[in-house]
Amino acid sequence: MHRAHRTLATAGGLLLATALTWTGTATAAVPPVSSAAAAAADCRPLADAPAQAQAIVNAACSQIGVPYSWGGGSVHGPTYGQDYPGGGPGAHDSQVRGFDCSHLVQYAAWQGAGIALPEGTWNQARWSGATARFTRAQGTAPLQPGDLLLWGSDPANLGSVHHIAVYLGNGRMVEARESGTLVMVSDVRLDSQYAGALRIAGTQQPPAGTKRFMTWGTHVGLRPDPGTQKPPVARLPGPTAVDVLCQAHGETVTAEGYTNDAWSYLPKYKAWISNIYINDPAAWLPGVPTC
Image (cartoon, rainbow, N blue to C red; front, side, top):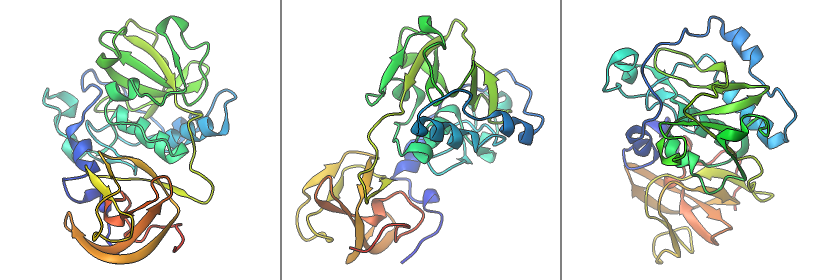
């Protein structure tokens, strides 16, 4: 059984979290990129970096020219955002399909390297999975392409971070800056709000023979068999990156507005999850073998 446009589905899952999370600003207009083609040519790793870091940059750069949309974007790509309550250029962002700053970074990390970042700039800034951190005093000297740059109202407090971007190297970055602009390449702004950077490249990758997906929903039960007759062996508290070994047809389940008999085996948990809770447009996951 197949269903289209999974990312537009029920409000109980990842898209609800996306819709309720906003980042960035919607204030002073910045001239939009005049030529998407020229901007895309400038968007690339500008210094040596590991393959995983380069993949993060390439994923971010693939969205050059996409509009900024307040609250817009997901790990799958641009989405319609929310109207900025302060008015101005973002007053109609619910009609704009694009990214805000945190969702562009989240997209790049996931699509480029299978790294699942949390929602919201402040949560991304404090992410426990960072492999290195850099202070504002260090500037850009120790950074490599793919590192995440941070700005906050109080640079000493990562909970105040309101903007995030992907470093390209040589003092340049790619960002979804604010309403009324497009995803663009910019000079790094080492201003009074610069709060340092973190490195996400180097985190654990999917084990051989598996494929990584994001789940959605809260308290999702993982079962010992592809069905609901036995109690869960574990629960996922919220959206979680999971590595799928294979999938099989099992008990037909109806939940969250979907009916599906496909289940995926997660070797890390030695358990099964209904494909209803795998955040992918297809009910039968692409590229995953049958058990």
